Amino acid sequence: MKRMLFLLAFIAPALVNAEPSSQIAWTPDILNLVKNGDLNKGKALAETCKSCHGDKGQGMKEETRDDEILPAIPALAGQVATYTYKQLRDYANGNRSHIQMTGIAKGLTERAAADLAVWFGSLPPAADKSGSKNLDRAEKMVESGDGKRILPPCFVCHGSKGQGEKQDIPALAGQQADYFARTLLDYKNGQRQNDIYSRMRLIAQQLSDEEIKELAQYYQQLK
Ligand code: HEC
Ligand code: HEC
Image 1 (cartoon, rainbow, N blue to C red):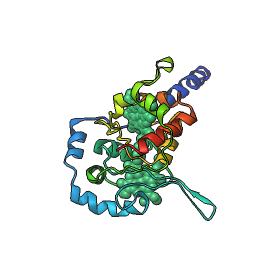
Image 2: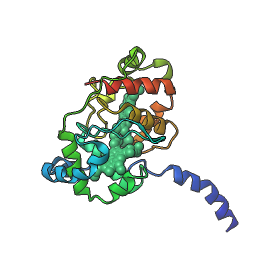
Image 3: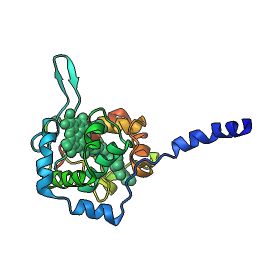
């Protein structure tokens, strides 16, 4: 018995680490569910998202109101539908967690999540030219990466215009810079871990906070 407990002490942490980053598997059933998402139902359901994600799905900047910081909210307009579907299921299944989104996603059926994902994917992405400064370093990272740090260029996955790629690679063009930076920091410190094969965590861990801010600015103004 004692020996069992001793062994368990070693095995238990390994089991915790072995927890899947996401429970989404891209089976034909799931791909069909999203492909056949109902635009009109999605549009109707999306009424409840507007107060936060904006009336055009453009998200919101970080704001300070009465000394309180209201954190930025991601744009959903023009997002790859399978990516949006995956995020909603990851929140519902506990693989990604957020004080508001976890409860909202738990309240959606898989079909409703697919309908919403298709609706937001049909909206034109926003691009915000404000706030851009010298973005040469970010542009270099996006186009060439950094061989010294084993950093692949962002474009190989996210596309040359930041348009994303099926199934689970998000569009980044027009994304709210403050949200973009926050979620990269969440990958960097392990707070967000729903990226299958740790693809984004391994990259974010190697970026400086300053580089993350510049990349966020770069993608926000991209159209
Ligand atoms: C109370 C405000 C609020 C409401 C209402 C809300 N959201 Fe969100 N949503 C957020 C915030 C804040 C985040 C960022 C959470 C994080 O950092 O994980 C977010 C994140 C998301 C993401 C992840 C985006 C990404 O780029 O990874 C999706 C998808 C999403 N919301 C969909 C929806 C849908 C669909 C609805 C309506 C059914 C909705 N949200 C309603 C505040 C809200
Ligand atoms: C190997 C492919 C790959 C490369 C290279 C890559 N990404 Fe990603 N990225 C992903 C995947 C996959 C996800 C979504 C993971 C998930 O489901 O959470 C993602 C998610 C993101 C997100 C979160 C978007 C959102 O809406 O929440 C940001 C921001 C991001 N990547 C930025 C970058 C930047 C900046 C670079 C270059 C420094 C980069 N990525 C390079 C695959 C990649």
